[in-house]
Amino acid sequence: MIDNIREADANNPKGYYEFEGVKKLSKMDNDWLDSAQGKAVKIISPLLTHLPDRYKYKIIFLERDMDEILASQRRMLERLNPTGVDNHPDDDLRRSYIEHLKDISSWMGDQDWLQTLYVSYNDVLQQPEVEIRKVAVFLENRVEPELMVQVVDPELYREIRK
Image (cartoon, rainbow, N blue to C red; front, top):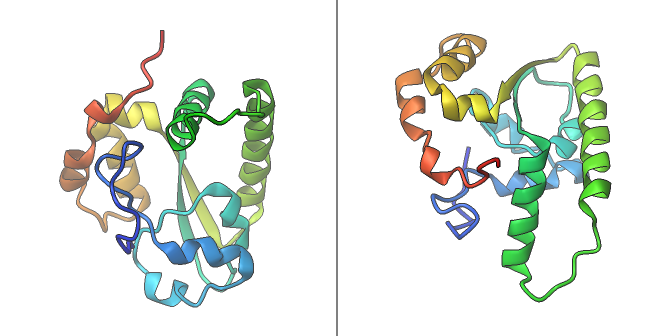
């Protein structure tokens, strides 16, 4: 489910697969969920706890190496504010992210109205056919894995580990 409000930029040169209404979940504005049934919706993990339990959800939780997350965030912030000073040291952000991931994982595990599949971002890049097959099975084969594999673009991977 996308609305094409955010245009492609240096951070996401192929654009954003997002729906603006998701940002209103924390304000309990979730009427749009009725039209989202049977569709994929990108929701950042802090907003997952605002999903109402009147639906059943299948969460595909994309996991990524913490150093890559921090490097990506740092570069994005630098592009958005090249002269700004960042007051968030990587160690503080790392601790905060790790704590959040533990909390959200625990919370998801406690909800009987949602199912979660954890998928490694790096594995998708390295072996897209294998990882997307797992996603297809999780989604009860209601997707076309061959088309999904074609969307994976390793050229967009900018976090080469040293």
